[in-house]
Length: 162
Ligand SMILES: CNC(=O)[C@@H](NC(=O)[C@H](CC(C)C)CN(O)C=O)C(C)(C)C
Ligand SMILES: [Ca+2]
Ligand SMILES: [Zn+2]
Ligand SMILES: [Zn+2]
Image (cartoon, rainbow, N blue to C red; front, side):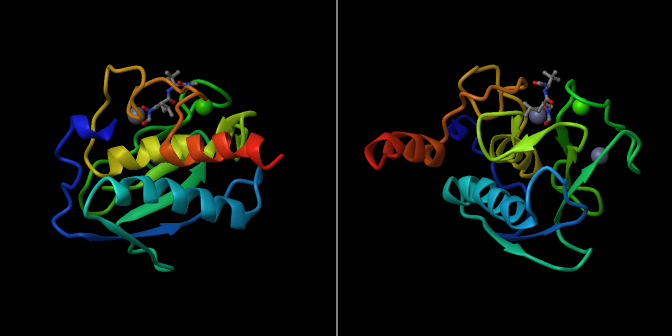
């Protein structure tokens, strides 16, 4: 529930750019692109924000997959443990979202679901902090059962069109 925080948009603009740098080898690039786009659309629907993909290195939200030491003060820790991190709105590293590539990233229920983790990370990119509500997208622990409207819709319709 993102309604608990009315400070979704702490950027001083409504059009936010994003770019994707290094990819994971767990998924096709096109799948990563669509999962990232879907995760951003969760926030677009919950706010007045629009996300536009940019091919330059100057995007507001730089998305990348990395392992261990990767150029910021928060090295990743290998498989499991921390899955990803993101920085609140601001210049430079502000808004950026990094994903630990020592995890197994999936589009489904195996490994860690990139769509769910990215939706959480982009909450931070927009200035949200953690929620203590276990049902919240911003809960600090990964749960593969966080059914977002889109995921709920797909899973509900799935049996119907089997
Ligand atoms: C499975 N491992 C976990 O559940 C770990 N939690 C995470 O990696 C958080 C991301 C999840 C919620 C997508 C880190 N975070 O808050 C980033 O913004 C630990 C709880 C072990 C830290
Ligand atoms: Ca890790
Ligand atoms: Zn990082
Ligand atoms: Zn978090």
